Image (cartoon, rainbow, N blue to C red; front, side):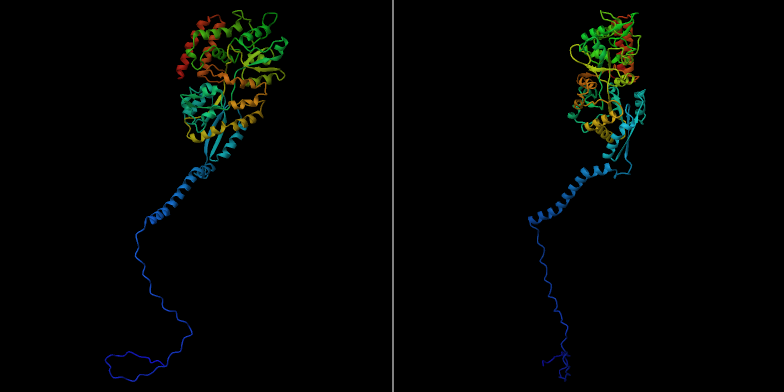
Length: 487
């Protein structure tokens, strides 16, 4: 047995006997060896250029990923959330749309479709009365409670520029705008800006009582020279010399509702710029005015084909007593309502050297006073889509004989087989606009100019010289245009 040595006091030199203790028995539980001493870490070394690049990548890559996610969110996700109404207080932006001819049940499906695609916008449609419409519209807009989107006549664009917002190219591109008729591209542009986009088009055409011309074996006239001959040939006076069957509704003012429009055609075909009628050559105006009134006076070797004191022109044509009448597409409804059995056709306006007619239509614009420009322009953009205009026509045609004829030239082909409607669109490509126009109910520019025009016609019918009548007319026209800032 190995001897156990115990260290005692070093001062005790005498060796004492030591009691020997019994050796402990081995334990059955293994004892873990003590851990090895810790190896000291080497001192940190300076990073190499590879280490710096790695460190930068570790920092930059997460930042780049985060930046991409932010861009994707702002560009794609946020607009969807906004349109869905999630952002904000939950209330959609409310805009008001004023129209004239269509009842709410016709327009509402169009609005519903727009709201489905733009859940953050609510559109309220109001069908307004045409009487005093322009005055009410301007009063409400300038008072701060007018509509956001509204309808206006094509002859009002320049005089209403201050209450119309220019339409940016993001709403309608130059290429898209070119799909509208040239008259639209002229009427809706002021100082280089586009201020309206129409949903409809209408032009002045010639209505013909087919039976009257067939009874005489005469074809439809294409020029004014032929028109003059045909109108005289089919005019039938009674025993007292009064006209029983009128060759054409032309020549006077008070009994012909479209007199301003017919005279506008004659002015335009006589090379008078209808956008600046006050600057017209007096001789050209006199020539057109004399030609027009000769049909009611029988002067200059004309046959008197119209009685200024007779029936209103549209009523007489619907009654079958007029061979030729000038009107717009809306006149078809009146004729059909009064005389469902009357057989008539529509044709291009007679011309002198080249075809020219006048266009009278309504466009949609955004109020410059609207507090919701972005949403209003978005709604206007939706209204003017080709698909929307096609759907709108279909909805309108369910309530009447036909809907508003389209203002987009690329939709005209759909009407090529409709002999009654196609002439209105076929001649729209060479139409011009005029301040002398009927049925706008505008007591400012249109009606004041028409008053001077009507006085000129009445003066000539009353034996005033055409030259004197034209002098008074042009003076009045210049006063009106200057008053409303159009000259």
